[in-house]
Image (cartoon, rainbow, N blue to C red; front, side):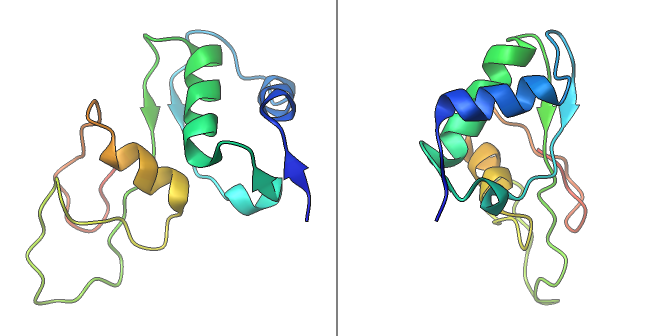
Length: 106
């Protein structure tokens, strides 16, 4: 399986025209990188490094398909079917998650 280094990841992001100061909405599939050295944290750090500390990085934290009897907790209810990066970002202390119980973003 392919292993993607941090330097390769940064290069991919810069080739995709990611620029400083840009706000981002990230829909990701980490599997395209094979094994990403550093995992979701490495992607977050690379995005933050390139876009800058003032940029907003948003991800879907959808709950589509959650049980109908479940009580939604903005802070604790995990994302469903949107990937490891979304769940990583949702759990960051600095994250804020929107209140919609089905189509939330962090």
